[in-house]
Length: 511
Image (tube, rainbow, N blue to C red):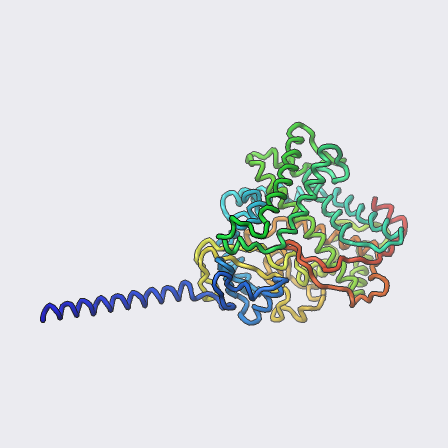
């Protein structure tokens, strides 16, 4: 009898301990795993994939209307949260900046960054910090940017000359190729010392091929890679994307290796005015970098400095043509500050607040990258009473943040007046306007990009009146978006009529 009682008591307490353990585990599971932000249902293997469609930023915005400004998605094996308003963006980019400073690993990122030797795709760590320091202290200082001012002025003059050529031939002006040439040659001057057209022979061939290869990245980068969300499929490369990235990477590495070789042989690339090119700086640093790291820096600067700026400027001009009253107001400001008897200069830009407001409004309504390059947290984090487990991917829907009706009055209208006499900037301190990001991962080329976009836009609307194509009303111009890589471009390339608005002798002063 005693033995049976003891067995019963032992069994009873064993059951109690087991139940308590299960309850404690369940409570831990709920607090750590189940306490994630709301989001659409998850299906086996694919997660929430069926709820997404193209374009992704619009799809995410629609889901956020139902599930809120911080939303949980599971895509394959990946945990993701989507941020859709300024308050949540500040939580990630300011209050938890260092926690979310890393990047998720991806097939594209590995090859574009030359095995994580860049500052866009590389994870947060010592190598990233070293490269970021080189960007900010060696390459993009105020003094360094100032040293390239004459080069920028010459490239803007070439742009005006291109527009004049088209206009004199009686053609409509297709704007994007002219803008791509502007930014490509400006980047080429800074990287290699001269504009592309001034290089010839072996060196010129490789520089042209380098820029052509960089332009190929956007194609495969535009396609979601199933291998990134279901890693077990990676060895099969079902979409052929890794093969494409490897091919493009090999092309870029081949071109840059030959360019480095030419420089090291003493074939230095100098322009007609004294300045120090980036390649001279990078190949002669005290901190000796591997060639892959130098390639990563050059690749970042080119990939983030050509199509991004050209698309931004194309959107801005498109909106001005659609809104003749805004165009007129901007031109009146230019006529007061610059006049009509000389070309526009960089030094005029600080005196053009309405032009700056136009650029800000353009960034709000048409951010260059509607969805920012993803962030990744390196440890468990808590945001807005939700647990965010380590290695969660964070998607910032910059497009949705800029169109949040709770933050912006009439958010779908192009209205630069909202930024007149406003202290809102694009420097990353106002989390409702994030074209360049914020915190540790903010774009280091912010000042250069702003300068070139402002200078380019001011020049083309100062020098020319712009009208839609014949038989097209301004308000009927298409503003549908197309996403190429991470970049938003108009679905229909901007083609317009350009008419001279300055005395003929002023155009001679550009060249």
